[in-house]
Image 1: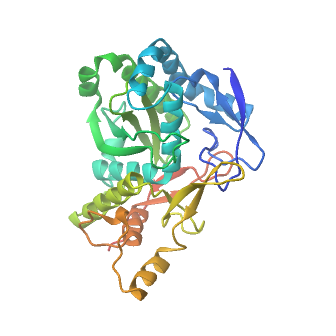
Image 2 (image 1 turned 90 degrees about the vertical axis):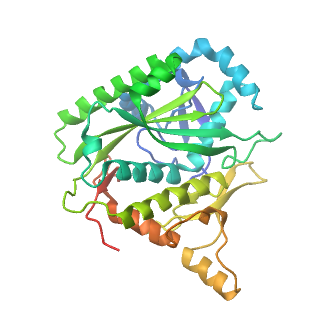
Length: 352
């Protein structure tokens, strides 16, 4: 499991975190790149210990990347048609986009899972999984210099797809999909062996870009408890759908949502990545301090709230209302072995 070392930037502008402990490195610390993933991904770890600890689960994806290496010439031709010089540069841009929008992608995924499974979580319990969450992006032509990591792609399709149907429709990726399902089975068995009463199941996801054979997979473990006595009603579903639309708009308009106040993890605000002149790092800067400040400023100036990320809403709810609806169903509880919050838990819904 060879790796190369790169220098990380400070935690206030970092786009990447350790793939195992999910911590942002401190200033002047180092992230270690898994060199085995150099063609299609650039998974990084904060230490050799984290890299070793992650290997049992990561090795399946690392080996999938080995299978992509004979395709490198094809991948290079595909990405050159959309303005990237090599598949490695394209992969780096795609991963940095996902890192820039990590909050929106993560929470949109949980919203899709909630809509699909309901509070009973029956869908999540089906193992091995029969469906996977698929995100399809359109690549924006890269700028001459280093493109803003938050604006390089647009999300054009999202939702669950049958794994069997997808494999039949994309025969060139059938082996990769089969390996993904096998990884789900391995991870599911390992989770069951821990006898964790909160563990419910796994949901695989696939991230794709139009016109490019490269696919990035992930597997999300779901922990929690089912709420058979509190099913989603139509108002819940409308609010959750608008929440997904809010997350999508934030990505497509280059306005990454990030938690600005640590005590309010479900109330992120939009911002922009700007490049510092001194070090050339991309730094996230908030558009405003809080949603309350934003709406008060709009009212004082006598104008309506016109952020592009608010387009297409059907419920008329303010962003904080949509976010609070999601927070009522999902809350952070439990912790990983190192004491850091690690799981999303189905919580008792608060009625609107």
